[in-house]
Every structure is written in structure tokens, then in C-alpha cells.
Length: 285
Image (tube, rainbow, N blue to C red):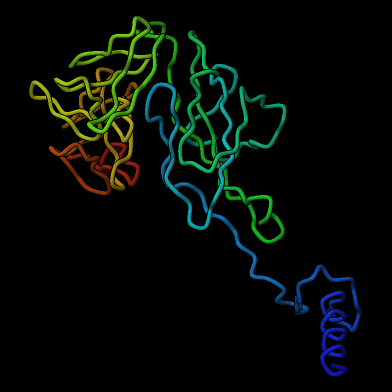
């Protein structure tokens, strides 16, 4: 009994204090922790999202960052900030003088800005990987990455605004305010287009109709503009049709999309060089 009592007293003393480099003793927290002078922990520096884009007219999306569990996102009105493809990386997005519409933290790889966006404005968002509160002692945030600008000035038609989604074994259906469920075909719901099958179930992923291809994501939202799928860039026009061949997304800026819709890059096509970003540049003679 004496030996047992002594062992308990010794263990309690070890747990109550921790020896650190230099021979100093500090109160412990119930956990034995050895802190080396130069290798206390391995510091983690988070990277940045490889891709950042608008999945729909109101939902921003980005690719995952290794070892990241949370992301910080800021939405800006583009009309108020001068930026271009060359200078946005140099801008200090932590500067509070650059007033954001909203700042959010999320554990997801997307953010729905619907409630913060209004007609007659253009928007973009920035995102970075950040440590959780429990990781802040040894994890550093990654760099901010900005999305392309989204012209929201024409998004005044919201379609069906009242109703709710209902999930069934056969799929998801939308019940309108009058209690009736929507039938097959295209429906504009709260500013986003969805495609339903003949049973009124929402369709997802890749779909073809009348000779055109569409990408409806994992939640049925029709993609427009640039988006990423399977580590490749695609471009859909405003009606959601996946584009092939030469595409001009802004005046004077051309890209080439293969027959499967993927963007070409780092290659010569029809006498033009396509950079790593896919942008067409003149060949040097």
C-alpha cells in the first residue's frame, strides 16, 4: 500500500508540473509535454486554393487546400475597388479600408452569398485557408486568392421565390407555395436554374438536352461562366451550355475549349500560343 501511494503522489507531481528547456518548471495542465528548445512543434504553413470560381451567380467555390480545415471568405463589390489580373495578388485583403460586404468562416469549399448580393453591382470574393482556433499556435494562414468578377447587374429575375425542397427516396423535389410540386423541365428558383426529370426529381451532375451539355453540380445548380470539374476548367455561357472551340469571356481575351469542354493550355493551336492560364497570346515571330 505504501508503494502504491508513493507512485500516485509522484505521478500527480509530474502531471502538475512540466520541465522545459533550461531547467525551469511551469505548472502543467494534466498532460506531460516535452518542449525541446528548437523543435517544440512542426509549424504548418497552409497553401492556397489552386482554383477559385463562381459555381453559380451567387455561390463561390474553391479547390481544397492540404491540411486545411477552415477557410475565411470575403465578398466585395467590384465597382468600389480597382483591380486587374496583375495587381490583385499584391493587394492587402486584411486592410480594413477595403470594406467587405461580408466576412465569413466555413469548413466547406463553397459559400452562398445570395442574401448579401443586390442587383446593379458586380462582385468578387477572396478566400484563404485558415487554422482552427485549436490550431492557431502552430498553423499559419495561407495566401488570399481572388475570384473572377461576376456581373450581377442583370440578375433581377428570380423566378420562383417561395417554396421548399423536399427529399424523397427517389430524389429531391421542389414544393411551390401553393403546395404543388414542380414538374419536369427547367425551372428558375430564387435566381438559379434547375433541371427536373419527368417525375419532378432534381437532376445533378452532367446532363445533355437538345444537343447541348450542361453541368448541374452536386446540388442541381446550373453552372454558368468558368467552373472546375476533375481538375479541369470548363466554360458555360449564360444559358448554361458548355462551350467548345474558341471562347471570348471578356473583350479581347480568348481561350480554346476542346470537344469535351476542357480548356486547352500550354499548347499551340491554330497558330496561337495558349498560356498556362489558357489565355491566347500572339506567337513571337
